[in-house]
Amino acid sequence: MSEEMETPGAPQAAGETRCGLVAVVGAPNAGKSTLVNALAGSKVTIVSPKPQTTRFRIRAVVMHQGAQGRAQIILVDTPGIFAPRRRLDRAMVAAAWGGAQDADRTLLIVDARAGLTDAVRAIAEKLAKAGRPIWLALNKVDLVEPPRLLPLAAELNQLLPVEETFMISAEKQRGLDRLLDKLAADMPPGPYLFPEDELSDLPNRMLVAEIVREQILRQTHEEVPHHATVETENWQERKDGSVRVDCTVYVARPTQKAILIGDGGARIKAIGQSARRELEALLERRVHLFLNVKDRPGWDEERGRLRALGLEDLD
Image (cartoon, rainbow, N blue to C red; front, side):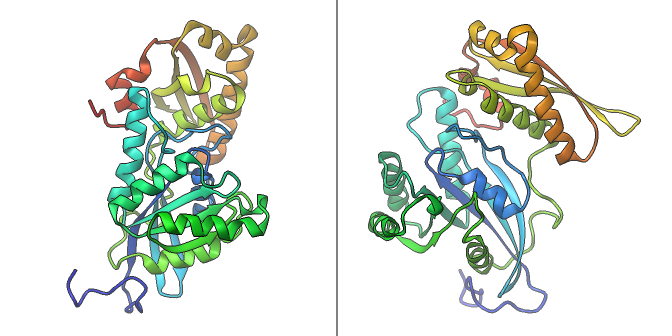
């Protein structure tokens, strides 16, 4: 960095813009996607109570007017970091670490209620080895007795170099104003990377697939949600302004296919109806959604399926 370049947080010159990438990382179910949606002010990534909901990096565009001026904050929602077993798992974890390496700022989200778990400790230790300054956000603080928070923050500050610590509740949208102000001031000077009115870099075809998968996560249980993937096979614009979308849901075993379809097709119909309603609200147009279910053993080890998800094959 040259001596003349402005440092983050310095006064902003007239007409100057700020823009940077913030990687949101953490263990599964820490509340990363909930936080990204709350900061963006709109749904840009799917959310469910089940771990490993996010499978690939999604960039959410946040415009914020702070004390230093207007900034574009690009939040990179990453998959939860866990011990991988399948090819899919390895690609997801690699996507998460890749997001941290590519960003201007890394924001570690920790579920304050769960505390310093083995998973959180492993992530903190790896981030510490990278030697890059970290911002820490203790999430779900509304569910924790206040005396527990400071010792948890102190433990994490001992494990890795934390520059800023935030106490937040993404679900209740508490503590987010300070976080946004700090992020905006921290973004480096530079041109915006996205149009100001753009919410995310997720194409509509992938948005549809993700909304359908979210309903699968919400309406099925046990092994089905994490052995299902959704691909948009056809997108057809109609003269009346509506759109027809055909999606295929792949599962690993015939038994999972039967569970997903349900008695007389009731389960897949309910999934389609809920997904369609949400898509119509997000896209602000009528959506004709058609779902097909296929069992495809080993799909989570197929390179083609990973590429369809936007993941890189590491082998």
